[in-house]
Length: 439
Image (cartoon, rainbow, N blue to C red; front, side, top):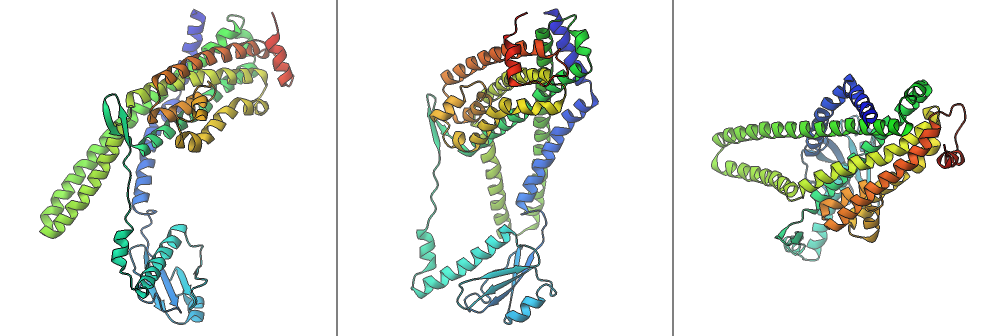
């Protein structure tokens, strides 16, 4: 046991003291917050470019002339000569030329560059709006009455439990579940690959021959797996803490600036304008409050504890297999033939998670995927935000521990032989022989 602890200590402190570890640990939360801020900014500003696309319109049908409403994104102007406009619209500074033939059978949008999907959609919506209004007018139907008749209804999801009912917040559960699954998916590959590379480096440099003269191969493999796993756990805990701190600071700063701007604006505007601005501010505040409420309605404690459990045991299970693969080869190039069978369950589950599991978290397939140890780290983390019976979680965890013990046993039997094999390209038949080999 002391030898395993020494190996764990060596693997842990060797990696934690590296400058690259410290740089990644403290830089990732900053980059994450910056990325999220950029995404929000670009979403609000529709690309962040702030430029207005100028569209020259040739309307031979007479339906749309001077009826298309310009806005901050698209500005329309109308001309009559199609042939001349097609030759000169770029020189005149227009981004697009919209040609509407008399029959309206084939409306065309020209541009020096390919028009974006968003701009094309906005132009289509504007044309549809005008055409619909005209058709309704010809049929003597009031468009305002029709608009009221086409009312949009929303369904508010509720969850009933022993403690009463509460909002379900499906989108929050969807986002949190996929985020947790993605983090575990990436972590298993990242830290499992570190174990595999470490085994290959020690094997190629022949240091392994000196090490196993003092410790058993199983002790070495287990110490390496646990040591790297502790590095990953430390990094995740620091990421969570730093991200939470930065989010709190950013929220406080933004909140104080928003409050100050509201006071200045209310002092400078008239009552009507101020009321409108206050209404917009209330909408923004309500949206932010709704996001916070939806997140707080989720079982946060359960999600965090299950995340740590499935991260650790998922890592231990897969890193044992990665260690076995590393012991069977002489360089990283040769690992490709063994990596696909090892990683296929993860890839398969992650692909299904974005459709089958999320859309029906209580289906038979979702339940089985959350029970099988090779797929449960991802499948169960997606299901938990939607609500999973405690018995299923307990069963999944027990099977996860048993799966870890089984894979560690199999990997250790391959590792003890493969770690001293040089110059021979391993195959699946050879791995079977190593597993069956008796000392």
